[in-house]
Amino acid sequence: MESLFTHSYAEIAEMLGLEKTFQAKIIYQNLIKGVSDFNSMTSLPKALRDRLSSAYGSALSSKAIRRDDDGDAVKLAVLLEDESIIECVRLSDGKGRYTACLSSQVGCAMGCAFCKTGTMGLVRNLTAGEIVEQLVHLESLGERISHIVYMGMGEALTNFTALIDSAEEIHREDGFGISFRKMTISTCGFVPGIRKLAELELPIRLAVSLVSADDEVRSRIMRINRTYPLAELKKAISSYQHHQDRRITLEYCLLSGVNTDKESADKLKAFTRSLDAVVNIIPWNPVPDLEFKTPSETEIRKFESYLKAAGIPYTIRREKGRGISGACGQLASETTRKS
Ligand code: SF4
Image: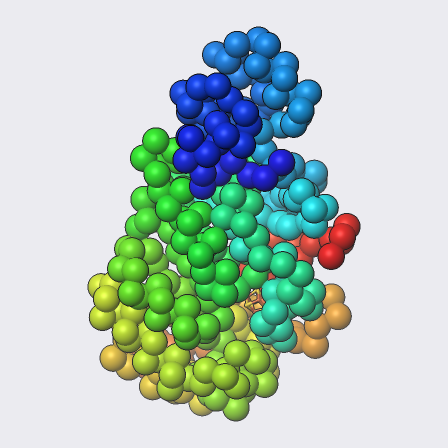
């Protein structure tokens, strides 16, 4: 069955052959509380529950099939209707705040050299409903999620309509009610998508995976830079900030011996000039078969000292989820049952 999310009550009623539209509302309200078994939706008449249950089994189009737990991070593998498998992660800050990291595609076409998802190639875009259902599965783990990051598998901005539809669904007041302000969309630098997002003027945070502020290095490890080099990327980010007066995050995956020297920090300083940006340093997470190395603690500290000296605002992300391959750049389903 197609996902019921991002459909109106009238559409859900039609999809399920319901006689009354308010029954669709009951089903939707159950779904957002994590009740996906029609039999457990006790405010529906028994005969209807039986019919829906035997016709569809569950009110979700996907199901969580594997869970890996690493204390602060829980990664779920989710089986989709066409038997593709995606991954999503629930991250905890240890103070009771939970963030859902959602995938937007099965695989990814962008092929960033340091990223496990990039090795899969693009299998297909997710529908908006499939994106939202990841949140249902993550909330079923038992905690209310307050923040959303579109940083899982895929380049979210190349699946623009589904991405925005899912954000609007998650924002819906009679649904999950998570404010746009608590959502972050991450991109590897897909300029047309950044421009489109700017025009929407939704108060969603933007995170750009920069990795290097040197065109030659960036083009080598991020193919997107060959089409949209740094100057164009910076213009798009500036225009985003013109529409959206919010600080953006520049994700800087620290790759030992590649982007950790003083020259890299100087170029980063030049790139951030005139932008309201914070640099998020993410020491690379090891991925088998990829050629990069995780920087040593000394290399990290040294790079940090360059940033400090240059006056660049930064944070260092100590990875959660590394042990379960749920950290940044590590998501990729081991198998897609059908591609
Ligand atoms: S870093 Fe993002 S855009 Fe690049 S290959 Fe990985 S998932 Fe795709």
